[in-house]
Structures are given as structure tokens and as C-alpha cells.
Amino acid sequence: MLLIILAIVLGIIAGTITGLIPGIHINLVALLLFFSSAFLLQYTTPLILVTFIISMAITHTFIDFIPSVFLGAPNEDTALSILPGHRYLLKGKGYGAVKLTLIGSFFGLLIALAISPAFIVASPLFYPYLYKAIPFLLIFISGFLILKEKQKIWALVIFMLSGILGFASLNFVLVKQPLFPLFTGLFGSSLLTVSFLQKVKVPKQKIKDIPIKKKEIKDALGLSILSGSLVSFLPGVGSATAAVISSGIKKLTEKSFLVLVGAINTIVMFLSFVALYSINKPRTGIAVFVGKFLPALTMNQLWIFLIVGLIAGCIALFVALFWARFFSKKVMKTDYKKLSLLILIFLVAITPIISGWAGLFILLIGTAIGIATSIIGVKKIFMMGSLLIPVIIWNIV
Image 1 (cartoon, rainbow, N blue to C red):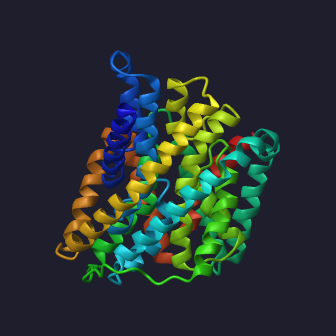
Image 2: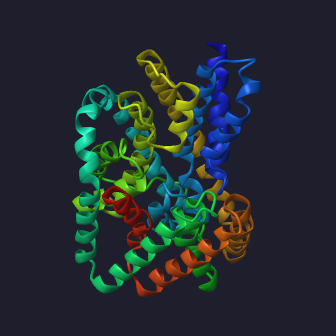
């Protein structure tokens, strides 16, 4: 029991670090843990190592919206939160924007735990049919969103250009961790470049909640249950795809959208461990490593890990609120133009380390597409073609 508690604490610390620092992904930490497992297993058990991994992963889903909102540095799970989050930041409401994602993450955690029994029973039955239907669902949703856009032609162009870049990146063997330069370019460095060129000034941040109606929260959580559980056991699709599906089902306010992406992010991660048990297939990178440590996951082990996830998430909520306050106080004392430039330099510098030199090429093209999207005035969501088109192609072919 003491080792489990220690593993949870260390996992929360690790998840906080990976969440706050762009480029340090939980998959990287899990990979290092796996490489060190021969040594570590002399002193502990696979159960303890997996406890650490799950605690880290759930914590990460709470923390990783902070750099997206305050620094404009997203990952593939938080990319769609960056635009509404940035707008609130420029209104002095960065803390409130993060708080909305945390509301989503916390309720998403409870929802995922509540639906896990039904998920365990239903997923083996529905998985074969949903697996075949997902590309057609994504085509329908993508087409629906493009037709709803005022600038339909430009929306289609951005969607296709992003898709071509995404497909090339994910199939280019010289690029390691291709999602990092892909999403950093499309959603992160492009926004930072625009902010730098426009000499954006961040106002004094108010450490206050953003008022949100109960109906807005209910709408967001309802959609998160549907789309989050849908993609949780499908290959190649994640929380960003679930957010796109939700956008096609119902129009949400910016506030409810932030709740939605927070909820989906946690639900998809949480249910990926359930999917590992129910259909014996890992659906996230972190679940792959859980499967390597425990190839035959039992029901008892699964429930231990779900409780671990719940405990880690509850603690992570308060950790995230602390760091959101910290960033709120510090960001207003910083020259945002210089900060944008420093973050840009940092992202460019770590790209070849994480993804190889070819990653810089992807970062550059993604940045250009992101800047063009901002200039044209097309919604950033169409850059999710970078994931949707590869998933559609892989599932059809």
C-alpha cells in the first residue's frame, strides 16, 4: 500500500512536469520507464510501475491546458482549446479559461468511472461495427463542418493542406514523434508568430471564475460522453477527433467548448485503460506501455487502476488550480512579445531533439498553414484535417 501511495505521488509530480513543459510528453517518460524496467523490477512490481504511469497520465490531462492557454504551446490533445483560451487570456481571463477545462476534466473523470462497467460489457459487442463505420462518420462530420463555414472553399483548402501535411508527417520514417512538430506548427508557433508580429499585450489577469450556465456544462458533458466513449476504443483517433465530432453534432459556446475539450481529454485517457481490458487493444500511447508491463490485465487490477486514476485526478485538480494562479500572476509581469519570441525559439530548438531535423520542416509548413488560417479568418478546427484525413485513409485502405 505504501508503494502504491508513493507511486501515485511520484506520478502526480511527473504528470505535472509533462503537463507544464511543452515537448515533454507522458509517452516519453513511459518509454524511459520501460527501458529502465529490468533494473526497476528488481525493487518493485509491474503493478507499482503501472500505478505510476496511470497517475502521471491522468494528472497530465488536467495540467496540459495551462501552457496551451498561457503560452500558446499545445499538444495534440489540447490544440483546439488554444484559440478560445487565448481570447480569454487577452481579456484578462486566462485563469477562468483553465478553470473551465478543469471543470470538464473533473466531471469527465467521474463520468468515465461511472460508465466503465457499461463500457466493459458493450465495447466488445460494438467495436467491430464502429471500427468499420468511423471513416465514414469522420467524412460526414468533416463535410458537414465545411458546408457550415462561410468561407467554404478556404475551409476545404485548409482542411486538405493540413491533411496532406499530417499524412506525410505520420508516414515519413525520418520523423520521430511527428505529432509534436505537426501540432506545434499548426496551432502553437503560428499563434505565437501572429502574436509577436501584432505586438499583442496581455492585460492584468483576474483570478476569477468565468460565469457559465448549468445548461452549457450539461451540453458539453453530454457530448463528451458520446464522442469521448466513441473514440476511446478506435485506432488512430483521440480526444481532438472527439472534439471535432462534437462540434459537428451541436454548436457550443466558447465556454462550453473549453469544458468539452477538458472532459474529452480525461475521458479518452481514462477509458483507454478500460479498452485495454475489454477488447485487449491499447488505444493510446500510454496504454501501450501499460499492456507491456501487464500483458494479461485482470478485472481486479483494472479497478485498482481506475481508483488510482480517480485519486490522482482529484489531487491534480488542486495542483492545476495552483499553477493556473501562478501563471496568471507571472504572465502579466512579462513582456508578451518577448515571451512569444522566447517560446518560439524554445519550440524550434527542441523540435530536432524530439522529432529529428526533418521535424523542423514539418514545423515550418505547419506554422505557415496556421498563419494563413488566421489571416484568412477560417476556423482553426479545419486544421484538424491533419489527423482526420490520415485516419480516414488508414481505415478505408
